[in-house]
Image (cartoon, rainbow, N blue to C red; front, side, top):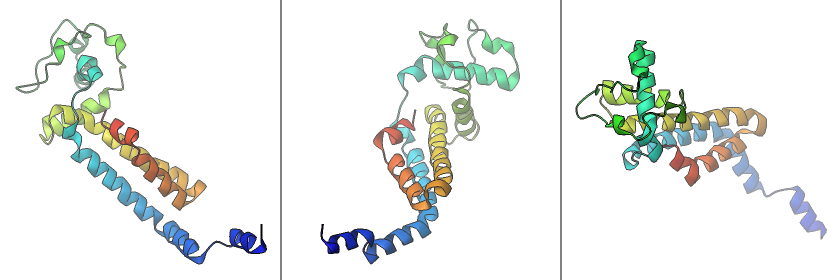
Length: 181
């Protein structure tokens, strides 16, 4: 290695230094803008995703039963032999699941927050259909995770690295696609 090559390795080009300094100064605003765009794109694409196999078999049914029980403390909602009254007409036909007699096959708490967003944004506000209302919670959770990742990483790794971390994670097809389920 010549002395010119070793000198270049120790002293990066001024344009790269300026770009790194700019990114470090603006990383916080860029991160919040990216998280906001991520959230908006997730909400805008909710109607492109339908009901998954597990949701149709039990997530909606047991989430609905547990949510109704916890909001009313009426134990009849936990009795699987009593059919649920529809919330509106037409409503999701969640009672006709082959898994309806196996509540232990589905986690008890996991379906409560999505059911709550379904109630708020579908039944009470009327902004989304029930499936999209159920899928809104994972979109909100994924966006909150990106925000938490940035807030955790920025003081430890630097603002620029934290921004690049959420940028790469948020644009990963698997993460973006799974935020809807």
